[in-house]
Amino acid sequence: MIAKISSGKDTAGLIRYLYGPGRANEHTDPHLVASWDGFAPDPGRSNDFNATRKLLVADLDLRVHQAGRLGRAPKQHVWHCSLRASPEDRPLSDDEWATIACRIVAATGIAPEGDRDGCRWVAVRHAEDHIHIAATKVRGDLRTARHWNDYLTADKELAAIEKDYGLQQVIRGDRTAAKRPTRAEQEKAHRTGHQRTARERLRSTVRTAVSVATSSEEFLDILARTDSVHVDIQYFPSGDVRGYKVALSGDTNAGGDPIWHSGSKLAPDLSFPKIRERLTDLDPTTTTAPENHRRPNPWHQATAAAERIPTRLAQSDDAPAQAHIAAFGEALDALPLLAPKDLRPQLQQAANTFERATRSRIRAQQDQARALRGAIRALRTTSVTGDGSGLAMLLDVALLVVTAAAHWHQLRQHDQQATAARQALIHLRTAYEEAAAAPLAALAQRKPPQRLVERLARQLHRVVPAYAEQVLSDPAWDALATALIDAEHSGHVPERILQQAANERALDDARSSAQVLVWRVHRLAERSAPSARALAAQARSSIQKVPSGQQLLEQGSASPQLRSPAEPTRIRRR
Image 1 (cartoon, rainbow, N blue to C red):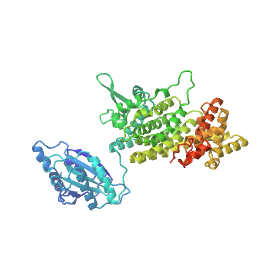
Image 2: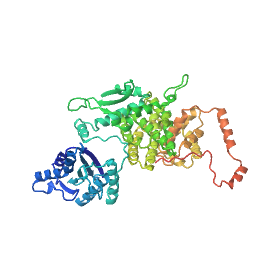
Image 3: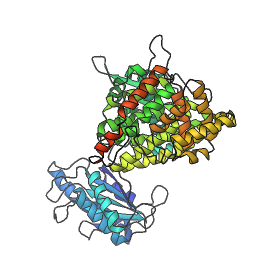
Image 4: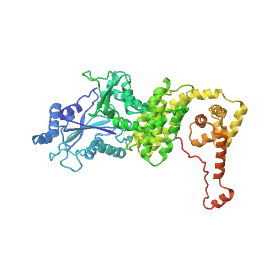
């Protein structure tokens, strides 16, 4: 059950609407189900509709007129609350709606329980699934009602009502969501042939500009160069930028003027100060390559940075974790610009859906995600080319990150954010399957000779015995075999690089263990193979770290359960 609360100054107009036919004749059998004293006149059950309606308005406005003669009546004296049940809920009776209305006006401070001076109100039902509460804000002692935070108190009471009546429990937010489109905006989008409103389209445009900009100045420049978007920048007297607002070309009001939206009205994190804070904390070392050095593959950099996020989320400090989730949201915002056209719809859907998961009441510690944000900016000059393995690799990690983000939000009872992350996962999985098909097929076509495959299979049994048969029976095994041979040709030892890939993250709930290993091996093989001296040093270090048999016997009584220092941290993919 949800509530929508607003204020106004026309009691007669509201009552006329509540008892009228509605915008599309949807109001059937409008009638009173409850009132402040149980004796309010009901135009819907009266033989003289117009006279009774005027009498009801007069009764509701009585105290407003009395306070007005003393100069104490509020200008916005009408309080309007609509309560709507979920489509899955059973039909509620008039008596049940009456009790619910009484609980809401009491919880919000309009008419506290037991307060004889509470405001006058009525609850009107003109459809099966909802009621409207109309009240005037002047109390019996002619003071204005104290109804601050009425939306939050009503929402809290509705959560209790849902449990008491066995109704659908609605997922509730924390006031960090972007503003919902109004009915007028939705109808206008429908008339103009768009699935999303102008506000929603502008929000996506601005988020995409933020995701690829390296400074607040460049962000404004990218917006100004975006087709079909008008930008108006506001300045302080000092000349510094104070804020911005945007409008879609062709989106005008009745007077033909553009309909402007400030950044903060698009979403809480799109105000200019918030954007400037994020872009100030970029890591410049990842956006440019050092002189006389080979530039690292940006897709591999971004994948490596994203792959560390689940570990960050598993740690106890929430502020850095929130920053990494927000930074990953920027990565999803940027991908539709870089991906092939056939993948853009799913990636855009994933970015739009995950947007809700990037904000919560926890204030993000933005400087903790500088490396990821820098890696994302580096991608803007490296669109998907060749076999598309870079994008597939990043999307494979994205599935893990979004799963971890959903779990992180759920543990903190961020219901809307957790739901958004799970919905984004559906679109990302579809995009990954499409993106991975071609590069995996290309690798499989180059399957090495059978004698090499058999040798790799034996190595696989030694390195990951628990997953070996699962990997060997996976259709992606041929692609993994090719990736290991390619790594060998680059100077790597297949068994060693396979061990590194297996140690990066557990394979327990991987969608396809073989595919996960393909992308890890592919990325690790891009690094320079360790020299013979480095391998010898690693071997000596390993020997020094392994305790002798006598040491193990001595430690046995104190440490009955020994854990290998090389045992990888296990992160479950959900």
